Amino acid sequence: MELDTRGKEVNDILLTFSAVQPDHIICANDEEIQLSVTKLTAVYDELSEEDLCLEIPRLRRHLQAAEINLEEAKHWTVLQFLRFIIKWDFVESLSYLTLTLRFFLTICVSVASCERSFSKMKLIKNYLRSTMSQSRLSDLAVLSIEHELTRQIDFDDVIDLFATMKTRRHSF
Image (cartoon, rainbow, N blue to C red):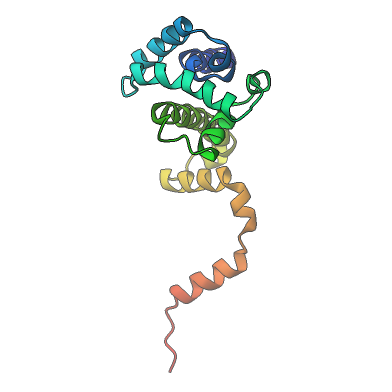
């Protein structure tokens, strides 16, 4: 049930951003671009509908000028489109499209980060840790979420550093 709800929410985001999906950028006609951009700018009014409608066909022309096979580009990811724009220095001429692509990629990462945080919280929060203070629980959550970084830490060095900072003995 919960997976269906989350799947629907992610699908809604994908539908909202259909204007910047690779297959849509390559295959859509001007009318379809207009409709998808209108839907996108209705939700995110920071984006310029007029500029996006001009920049999407411009990206197609840039792809052709760079001799990119459009059939292959249809199967690119949004990140690959953004990398193409940056590599060929089209960021200024496609400024709203670049902003939209970055915005879309950021939303996807944010959703994944939240999902990971909640799943880690379920692992950490158990009966034995129910009486723990909120700050300690938060610290444990951060350590669990960032477990790759935590594995690289040499705890002996941390203990030595802490001991030198908190030393209460005075040397005579």
